[in-house]
Length: 499
Image (tube, rainbow, N blue to C red):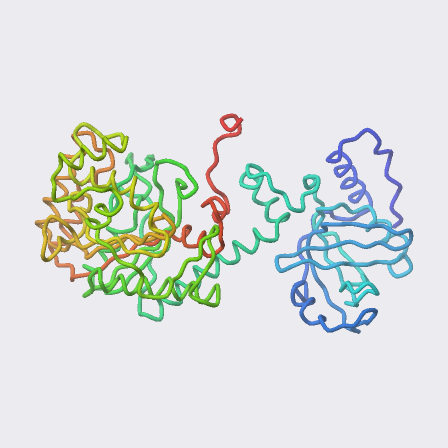
């Protein structure tokens, strides 16, 4: 069937032009939204297989590929273009005497953004460009919305985050970032599998939120008439599994915290938590070093990486400093001087100090203000005040502190770990202390979880636990300045608010 000439498109918007082209295709008996296609190759494989072709050389092979048209160039009875798939980009070439007038005319009327399947022979053009000479093609999807003008190198951050699908088309480095993210998570799973950890899944909807000091998102189950929370942590369900007899468990999953947004905070993010029976925080510290140094070695080929102009060294052992020594060094205050000294120093530094702030809260305020930003190389900050860590065991030689560490890299918390509290009486008392703090206005205090205390009464083995922020690890490994750069669909303000 010969395609009828399209009516005048003058005065139409580009989207209206594309709609008219779609209608013309349908009128010609061509479905502009195909059901399937069976490529024989991805573009990167074509490029790699025929890399050695000399200028002007032909492969003699026929391949089928599929992808999006990202460029078009017409030359009378010949046309060139570029097609992009997940793996890469390649040039195509077609001549009217090879395709026939009807098919060639339809090819000329395709638009940048359309998705096609092509079958043809790879060859090297005289200018040295690997190209596929089209023998036949199939329109797979008619794109009705044009890509942004000069979409290659699209830089507007708001557009990139809100329309990640366009960002992925426009910016090859963005595609590489998310490929790297996938590889990082795969490598973590392989590492933990090799160390006999079992991958498990625990509930996202919880009747009592716990495992961290954070504000939750709330929701409601209509059938059960039950108020629920999106989890803020993976900790308590995983530790219940230790009670049940599993000795090494982990989960990589989304958690949700109803808090601020910044370059290192998103309301939902991906967390790795693992728990190892018969271990303490020193064992977990060694595991953390080994895991992160291996990830850097696998991705970068060495123990060093460049992040935002800083050279970071992941060669174990990482630096270590106690919370007490860090506050002496960077805040100029000694925890042993007491609560009044801590409060005075916080006020002196211009911090917003709650009237009823307890010792642990004052230590946290000073730490957040003065310590983290000074820790560039991977550093374990150890031994936290017991008041801020209600799920960790007290230090064996100093019950005012708990066996806990945070791993700080380039001023960001990357990991948090404890020697896990498994004394049900102590745990119950700590929950009561948290409840008192909550009643006094400390919103981030932990909730009482009677069922968790009951689980501990059945006996949980001594254990070490670890949480790692996957998004921040990917930030480091891809040299990304913002967490939004490593989350496919980050949370954004509404368009009205943003304007």
